[in-house]
Length: 379
Image (cartoon, rainbow, N blue to C red; front, side):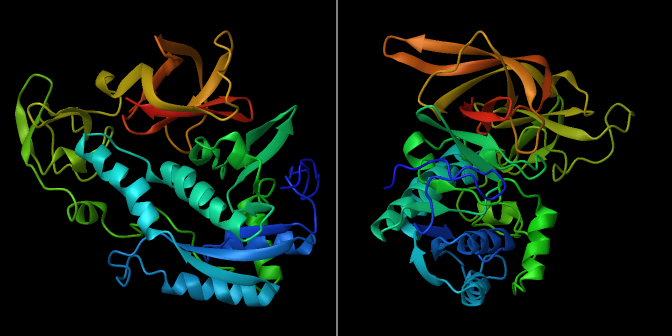
């Protein structure tokens, strides 16, 4: 691979290679990856599109068909004049991502499979495949940026903070980031849509995908019940009063309000019910009333399975920003490192203010201004 990092085009978004290098673009059929491919082609890169098929179970259903996505990819590739191929990573996805997804839910946690999918599929299996095709780099339609700082490659937030996706990319490492381009890093979504319409992309008005990639728009509980057994049990208040029955702890997440099945109020306040905790030993769901209930807030958290993008442990003397969920504004915090005989084991965060519904299984991602440093899984 070429050891060139600072090609300062695409409105000051740093690149890892220069034209006419070969760039393989992950194309999903959506407008973001389509515009990313077009931008690179306009800059003179040798662009090849790659469509990843990551899910096969009930793929012919109304919720999760990849047929239309593939048609859109082919149509876009034809319009902008690039070759495109499809590759099936369904086996890798089930082994590296979905098995972990089910294991976490079974343990009462709420995982974020998109984070693991990026680390294991989009920037590992896909990257390896692209390198075998002779690529100098890969590119995706993520809203994020990369920059070389001394001998390290940094992951930066997107210019458009409302679309920033660095949270989902925090498990990437130096080897992966050094081969990645994010052409949309300095654009907002409105500008991307305008480009798509201006050049006549057939998917210019296509609705953005939502939810977990392999679930689509289907009811989540209906999907999860196909893979995890239901184990009903009591819903109780903090004082031990039974107020209802849950269908299985795996089907609920901390801070959840909708879908609990509790109407009215026990104390006459009329405040809505929220999931506050899970008692796995007694198969009991703890619920409280009111968004401001103290049990829904915490000022500290602990993590496991950590990753520092630079490979270096951050300085604990600094104040950082952290997200405990996507789209959350950075919350001011300090870093605590947990050591054992083998070295750094995990880290904790102490926040300046109380944080709402910090959820085990989700990612705590650490930032120093615009730089994403990495993170860990909340325990």
